[in-house]
Length: 185
Image (cartoon, rainbow, N blue to C red; front, side, top):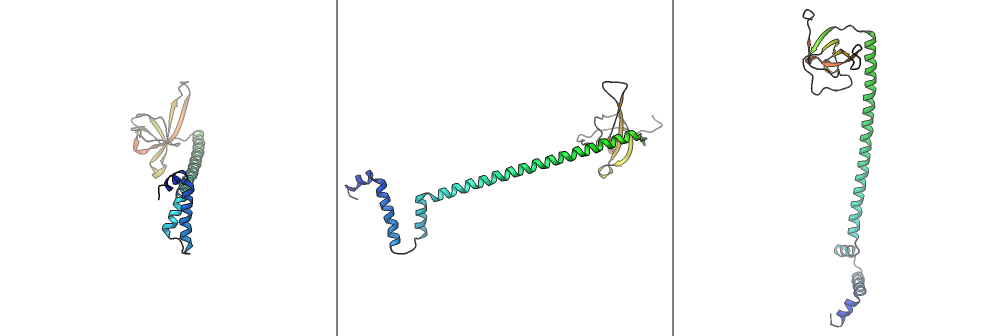
């Protein structure tokens, strides 16, 4: 470059670069040889194609991930609703069976005293709000999973009315109960 052309390059920089770039590409294709990979890559880098492609790919991946998360959340909510409905149905059936047992007036087979109350003891078929030392009537032995529970009932006084009594029926682990001898009671 000469001194005369430098100020012209600074003054007309965009026009000169375009002329130089097009001249370079024209000279590459004048000899009728296909452009090399390096030349094609430099042409793509010049117009920003890699950045556009990478940006589009990232946006697509994020969008697909978001859609999959929404679908998984919806499936999880549907499963929770189904489980809640099933537990509710089981609780209604259990209450109905308990009412039938109370109306039948099943005679207890024997009585037991509660020796321990398990820490993790919950469910819709269990005998709730029991304390160590409570006396329960065993209506049926060997119920539930692995036949490890007894169907028990306990008579309780209602908190508002001392004369009225309520009966609770539910499962209680056999390992936490001790039989009461009829002669001792």
